[in-house]
Image 1 (spheres, rainbow, N blue to C red):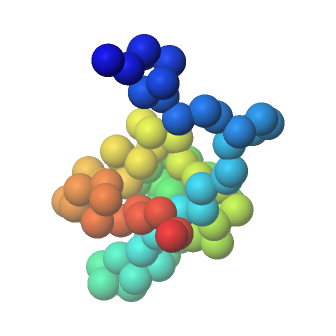
Image 2 (cartoon, rainbow, N blue to C red):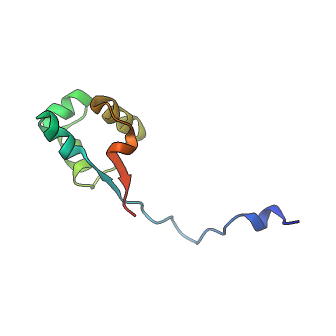
Length: 84
């Protein structure tokens, strides 16, 4: 029988690798003819936040990601996907 420590994969030293996240915000905005400012206003964030998310410089917090999904009427995974 295996010892529980043998079941875990050892973690490499240091921080985990950064997961890049792609998003479909620009396309979803275009479908609705919304500007970045209009989307920002709907979400209660700045236009700069929307720009940063769209360009991949900033990943939204989980509550913001849920808000984005709700505004577009889509599940989070339909808007955000990991870059593999």
